[in-house]
Length: 457
Image 1 (cartoon, helix red, strand yellow):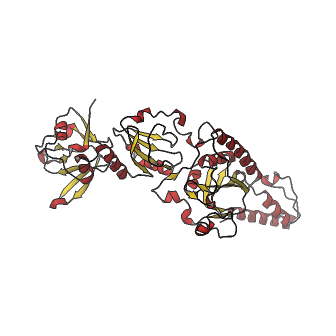
Image 2 (cartoon, one colour):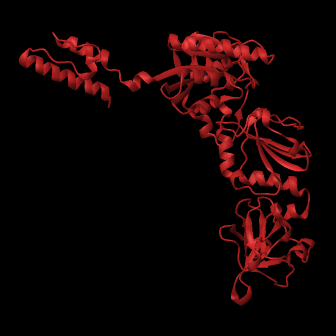
Image 3 (cartoon, one colour):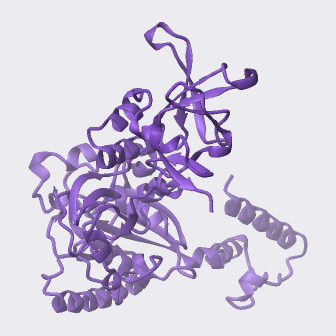
């Protein structure tokens, strides 16, 4: 139901009734009084006044601005995350002579057609919460406006940089900030801004499958085509980070094995990776977060324009790298290859292998002081020495695992019926649990090569 239309109808009907009954003047409502006290001579005048004054403060504050900064998928998601932004739609604008559809604008013949539609986003925002100037600053910092008809590997007129305004106020702000940003680009030795600033003719929403594309496609990365040049001393989008890029010291990354996650503010895949993986990580290989501009001194072979990018580094040089979200299983398998290499421990962890009886790791751990055995990859506690006992089998044995640290899986391999035990966080194979423990209890038969030990303090 259209509430405003219903309200208008009810008020107009009331006016008609009052006019019909008494033909007396009617006092204006508080909203109408803002326009001055009025006398209604007929129903048309009443309707016109109601229509002209039916603008609430919220409606006044809500504005729309159309922006083109390359592929609209990532742009839509980043702007949606901003406080004060009400809604963001992907779509097409500023074209003529062809249909505004994805199939049409991506045809080869349209690639360098100046009349092609641009991929854009329409940002609806509350300007009492987020200013137009803030949106335009973020627009310039999020992409490379010096590139004409392209952003990174996306080439064609559909990817052009453009600001399509709905008011002269927006136009003035865009023009002023463009001049300011050009000065900052000049200071950094960058090129000329190619962004077109025009009045919006018409916005065409993109097909449904393009809307909220990143949110509906859980595995991927967020392209970063920004120049690194900002309006402030460091990016507006990076203000939630703990320190400016210029203060990051990578000396500690030049020695030993390290994990570096290339992060970015307002990157949904980065946040998901943190929630699913790094928030629970407590391994002995240090893990660091960096922006793509904070990799000085490191030898990186992977592309760094997408986030998250996970790098496994040894002595400052990348050994393994992956651009895009990684599941917990994928991350820990990569970490296992990085830390364990081609060893029996890796085969046990990821190939469901079994330690040799009385192996070196068993001898190392069979008589430790009080403490906790942890997952060698994640650092998560798995078994306590208070539950350890000598089964005489040549494998570490425990009465129980630490609560909620492992998972159990049916294992019918080799013609046997067993219960496999895996680490909950990493999913690595730990061993099996049997019902032949002391006093009819459990016996967790665990491979020592996939464990580390932390003494109790």
